Image 1 (cartoon, rainbow, N blue to C red):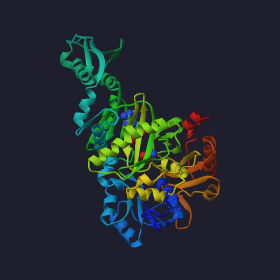
Image 2 (cartoon, rainbow, N blue to C red):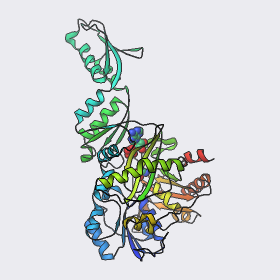
Image 3 (cartoon, protein in one colour):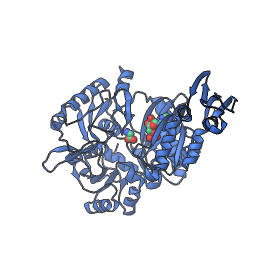
Image 4 (spheres, rainbow, N blue to C red):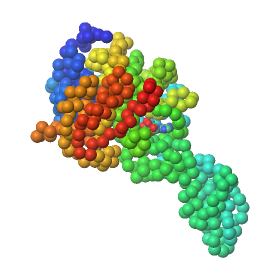
Length: 507
Ligand code: AMP
Ligand code: GLY
């Protein structure tokens, strides 16, 4: 790979936009480039302040950011999070003639609108779950209630309704329960509803109880709010009630605001999940080393979903064969489809996949590096990151070949007490220096802040991404946990089983 002799091979100052663990990892890696003369981060955290200079500008203030970049002579700005990308930060920089890494607003819609992404996948023949789009709550509810339930319903007791009915849908069953329990149809007290499912009979004394049973029938569906919802807009529903509740939250209570104008109902897929990240300049695709995050809060992948409690790289489940298949069936077609739609994509494409027994299917696309996957992956990158990102911006990615440390990396996220629910900020973090001195360990900061008195304190739900390399997954894991145990802050906690999938497949 080039070392500064290519076009754009001059000395540059870089600006990283964002304030999480991913942005700390980007600052750290960019700083290693011999061509980087200064690293700035807006707004950054206590960790990015150790790599360079934090600038107190919000990621949504495009005017202040572009003005700063011009004034300071920034040669490349790298956008970390999805929100500014979806809101057009790259367009704003380009309008000012500034060099910036990331997709433009129209291409970032691949993550910003799940409806856009699904429709594009369908057009391009990219494997993904079957889906339907809804623009109103009643339509979505009707669709859910029209799902097959296969219940036999009959009245018991003194009712004029004597027949046994095979109900094919939930809505039919609910209507029939109302008819049976309608006092006008009853000739005496004690009328009951009997529901029979696969030969098993249950008797209910009230309409409410009977309906409750119907709404508890299994449903293999996933509901997704169309727009950005900080990773919370996806509901994997086990039964009809959960689906109706999800529709209510998204479209009636509108807990995600405009992101809930449209809703996707899609088929639930089964299999192992993995994600593939790749650089693309709209023509060439260079996949990054594989990685895997742990989304659930607690050990054994239990508990609520989070932004990610840890990650490891490589992901042993991603074989060379699978990688080739994903490139052929997913990455190449999506990059082409975006180009045909006149929304050329330049940046990082992140494909979240379900490995079904019919092959890999796309759960979602993101338009940025994953967090905390980025921390584990960049720990292994040996090539100059600035060269690679500039090659994307200049549409000459075909010149780039990335070199990787063959050793695995493990990232353990240390979180605040209460996360992913409400948590306190401002707890003093101790022993960061001791952990930083450990060999092959890097502590990436996420929710941290440098207080006026010079102490580093917690300032978010995910606080640190303690990352380690090791000759084996076992050693990388041991080292990451040793470092995590060294660091202390009130209420701080982490999962104890990060990379357990990898250990199972490699030892
Ligand atoms: P997404 O933000 O679309 O990746 O969804 C978040 C999580 O929801 C994924 O990581 C999966 O665990 C789950 N999920 C999303 N779509 C589906 C689906 N069609 N079938 C099963 N699980 C899904
Ligand atoms: N770790 C998941 C994400 O960055 O979307």
